[in-house]
Each structure stands twice: as C-alpha cells, then as structure tokens.
Image 1 (tube, rainbow, N blue to C red):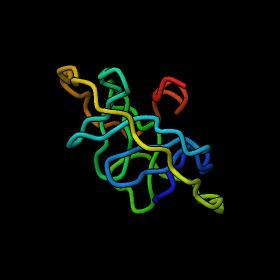
Image 2: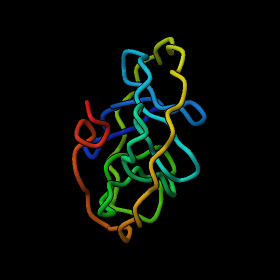
Image 3: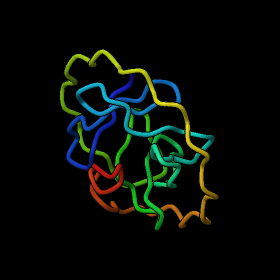
Length: 116
C-alpha cells in the first residue's frame, strides 16, 4: 500500500492498486483508468502523474514521485498501513466530465474530495 499525502504532507489515505482506503482501512474510492469514483459511482476527480485532482484540475493529494503539479511538501513519516477491508461490489460509474486543466495550485481538501 502506498500512502496518499495531502497538501501539508500528512497521510490522508492509502492506495492499493486501484483501491483507495481511509486511514482506518475502510474502502473509500476506486480508480478506473485515470478516474476516481466513489461507492455509488459518482465521479470524484482524476489521478494523473501521482496527483489526485478535483474536477477543476486543482491538486488535492499526491503519492511519492508525483510530478507536473504544485510543489509538494516533505511527506511526514507514514504510519503503518491498516488491514484493508474488502472493497464493495463496484457501482456502475457515471460518465466522467471533461477534466479541468491540471493546475500548479492546490484544489479542495481531501475530505471534500473523497466525500468524508
């Protein structure tokens, strides 16, 4: 599992393949290609070049090695990853909107992005 960091370098989630888990190990979202979807199939944003981006193109979070976005802070020491829950059956994903142009700035906060 890879830690997902917010704009301040704090771990806010975990990425395991195409599954995104919260800090407690609960399944939070799924990747389908570059698109990020919530449990009910709602489009949350995109994941490109190591950055999670909102629908306007603002960076929301990142993984190590992210490029092509805002300067990333020094990541905090990652806690041990949780034991992940089984992901739910995938919902029929909505059609993704046209993505915003990738910005060099930060967008919304992770909790608003993921719907927590």
